[in-house]
Every structure is written in C-alpha cells, then in structure tokens.
Length: 270
Image (cartoon, rainbow, N blue to C red; front, side, top):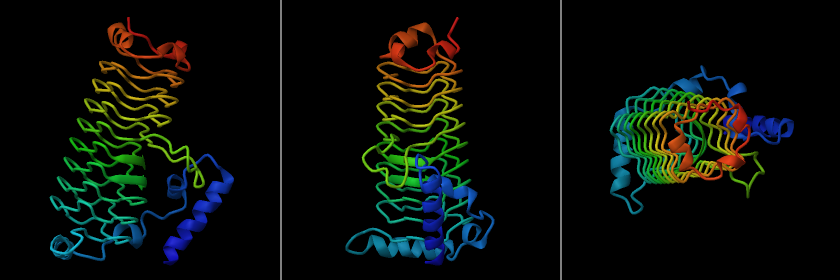
C-alpha cells in the first residue's frame, strides 16, 4: 500500500511538471529497480501454478495476482489468460510461451522479461513497463497497448489489429500511448494496427507488414522501413525525419505520404 501511494505521489508530481507525459511512463526515474520490491518474488513457481489451477476450477476461471512480486521466477508456459495482473512485478521473469490472452496487465512491470512466443491476444497493457523485453514471435493481436516497449525485441511478433494509439479522450494522467523507441520490429506483423501518435523513433521496421496501419501523427523519426509493406498505410502528419524509406513501389501503395511531416528529411530509396 505504501509503495502504491508513493507511486501515485511521484506520478502526480511528474504530471504537474510535464502534463504531456504519461503517468506510468515517468516512473523509471523515481523507482529503484534494484530494490527487493522490483527484483524478488514472494511466491514460488509451484505456488503460482497452484493458484492458476485453483482459479481454473472456480466460477470465474480467472486468477487474481494484482500487485504480486514475481520477478526473476521461471513461469514459462503457464496460462494467465483472463487474469488480473494489475501492478504485478515480473521483471526479468522467464515467461517463454506463457499465455496472457484477455488478461489485464495494466501498470504491470515486465522490464527485461523473456516473453518469447508468449501470447497476449486482446490483452490490456495500459501504462505497462516492458523496456528491453524479449517478445520475439509473441502474439499481441488485438491487444490494447499503451506500454513502454523501448528497446524491446519484437522480431517476427504479431500485432495485427493491436491498438497502440494515444488515448485522446482521457488525458488526466498524461498522454498515454504505445512507446516503441529503438524497438526491433523486423518482420513483425502490424497489419491493421492503430499506431496514431505512437512513438516509434529509431524503431527497426525492416520487412515489417504495416498494411493498412494508421500512422496518423506517429513519430517515426530515424526509423528504418526498408522492405516494409506499406499498402494502405496512412501517413497523415507522421514525422519521417531521417527515416529510411522502402522502395518507390512500396511508397506508392501508401496513403497521404504527401501529408507526412519532415518528408524532405527522410532518406528516399534510389
């Protein structure tokens, strides 16, 4: 309880100092990531597994792990689908092939977590901290994501139909949006994803499938789009400063490229 109140206090101070910043995305500068709260677990894998099995036999068939400390455990292959993982700590946890379909992971901590081949189909990841997470081959299709995925590896990940756009209706806690700064999205499937106002500065998007993406007002400064599929992509007010663009044929399939910002500063194909 004391830690949650401290987080709330720090977040409000950050918000007052910079009203355009997302509350949960300002916490890293004020939280000790080496503290026991962020690095230790209060449960064993066996105990977590027992809770999951008990929940699967209950009326709601969902597990409640809100606020639990589960960092650095091996929880690979476990099924958390539909569960409440609000504020859970899973930093550096092995979650390979784990399932979080329809689960709520709002404001959860998964920094440096191994989520290779994990499934987050239609999960809620609002204000979630996932810096440097390993999400190669993970499935985030249809998920609502305003998480910080800076430096994360999403090679071959599936984000089809995912919503990483900024929440423009509720900004009382700052501008919440998907942050993929310097993330590795090579060969990822982002078809039909909503990336309006998302932050993809210096993201690696080589050969990614961006078909029918909404990139309205997104930040792609310095991003590498070599070989990307841009069919139907909306570039209205997208920042393309220093971005590496794909072939002329790929660009011809995009929409509103002439309305992009800093297009003259992008690196055009030969």
